[in-house]
Image (cartoon, rainbow, N blue to C red; front, side, top):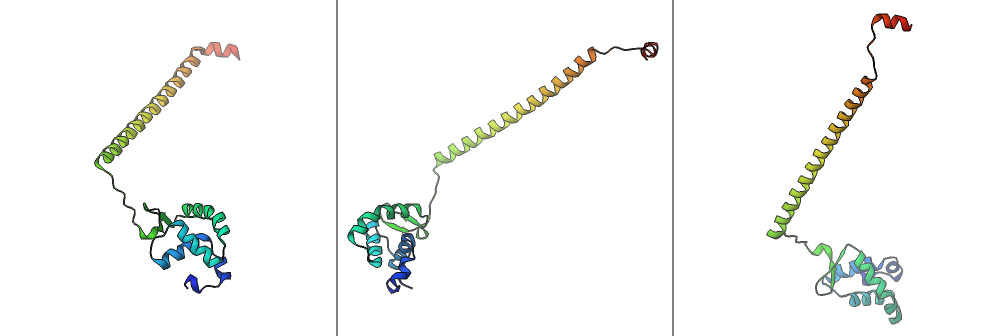
Length: 148
């Protein structure tokens, strides 16, 4: 149903963002912030004072709503109408490859350090065992019988 055919009670149930989405869909063209909000104010019966006091919050709401995109011209449109074109230049690709190599080297270094730490810990355990053996004495059977 078109916005112009909706009752005021129905319009009041919609958020500004929902109204904006419907307006941009119906108009099938981009619009700037004041133009869209003027239509909303007309639909809801707001005064010029209401327009002036609420347009800042309205603009913030549009910026936070991911359904909309602001174009270079300063006009709003529905994001679905715009493809996002991400292209990497050759320099960017080389930089990404270099960063990946550095990250792989760091991970390898960390693995080697971890392995070294494990080896050192095992060596320490073996050294501790040798220290414990120094305190032991070998007793023959006669000495064992005497101690009993």
